[in-house]
Image (cartoon, rainbow, N blue to C red; front, side, top):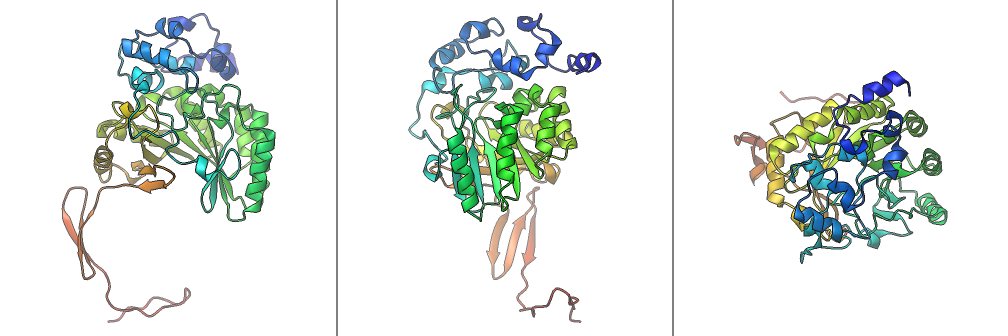
Length: 396
């Protein structure tokens, strides 16, 4: 990267905090440096932000799976004095994680039950989920897969990868493969290239998807070399996990531009989180900012009842209210689908406000976003079927 380009990156809207003031720009732009220098210890974080007692106790409690890990880039976005900073709330453990609700589940999405071979989840007829790694750049405190995510050394083995390839080959109905984890962009380019190559070589697989949060938590990972790898396997789609408008920095916009300019369609997946994004104006702001960086809002997820996250879950009625404040109040492109992942393996179930007020004898009473009511009457006459090449005629 040229010196002029590096200087421009250093002016982005995140601050180089005192902790890394002597780090050279070449290091700061090296994604491997960020992984190597993640904040994982209490004393390290205390030197950067003013921790509350609940945070200190939470960090001490979070050992083993889903232990704390914060990239320097993400840490540079944290408000050091405000415990309710949305960036901070997503990455710093609270002692609340030790409180287990009666509704909590270890595997709320029932993925283990729908896994025909290790690392592969086959729930829907025409698509599968391939979990290739248990590593992420940053460990979100609301993680649905906290039962498996967080192992620094464990990714899917070559043997299990081959079993997954063989299973996909043997099932001709599978046309869509979602590669996720952990985060698949934690792999080196060569490893990711090999996985994409093997799956795309299966003739009945029509397109690939990558589920990732790295463009948000570690945008330095999106390099020109990575883009070259991804472009080899079009059509490839990318679902990026965004939760708050403050995550959309100039640095993040730049990498989304790189991805979009390379022909990769981008969609967002957002988790509804109590005290972070559970107010309509916050969610609307996020959706607007996503469209401005060419990321199409796709899903808002009700936070799964995964163990240790009850303090982050808000009510379904709150989620429906947010959807009520989006539909009709902003562009349709800004309105994602609000879903609940049916606990125990039910899959994504759409939830929305009820716009049908009444129905009787083919007549629907509908309400719009303003609460006004309208009548829609279905045709009762039996129309004669027509061939596609015949013009439609109307009786006079």
